[in-house]
Length: 329
Image (cartoon, rainbow, N blue to C red; front, side, top):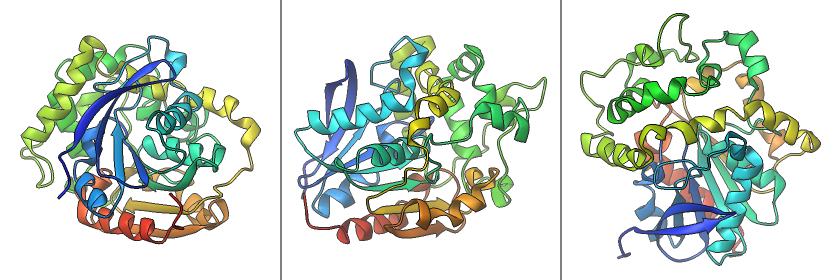
């Protein structure tokens, strides 16, 4: 029987990061997405620790209990990949398996692309490896979906920050249900676009009831951690989006690089990401981008919150992936 999840604070690259940890063995680093936290991995700690791994999930820079740098420019993918490498070192490890969901997936993929000497293997949930910069920039998505595409809407300083921060628990409840496979509208996933003249939260109404995988207690834990940043609760997370265009410039020297380490991709068939322009082509190219791809897993009826909605299937896929890796620690 493993000890309960323990919490600590580690300074990485001058930023204090809150981490949750359980188990002993080779390091597996779990990177959450938006708008989430370490708690998104609550169902993975025990099973992976029992399988013989040291499992660590940080609140990434700007999120929840971690420090939130003031400068918007401090949230590029180079900063975020640097945090991953710095965290591995701060934990006293030389290498790690890195697993990411949503925004955490581009961080995981890019870190693996840049530092295969440190990343033993990589898994991405929801977002496949769109190298070298993680995702299409606003200059492209404006042409595809218009100014109301959520990633473009988020570019406006202070706007989404204020809307989401008015009632943190309600914002999280709305977004988590809206993107889930339990939302009937996701039977045919489509990009999240805010119509002109509407507010962000107008497009994600309060659910009449929460799905079975999400409780009010879960919402309370997420919201309490976010509330530590007061009116800037969502500013750090949104600043990740405000660097998407800049990431294209910073990572341009790595165009043509692939993923050299063993890889795994897991996605729900009701995930809005599957509806993004070019996603079919990108998924068809997975084995070219990641020649050591172990598996591509599609979870039927699952929405965007992969490891929360389908923990048993995700845990099985991760344990199978880890079991097939070389025995190096």
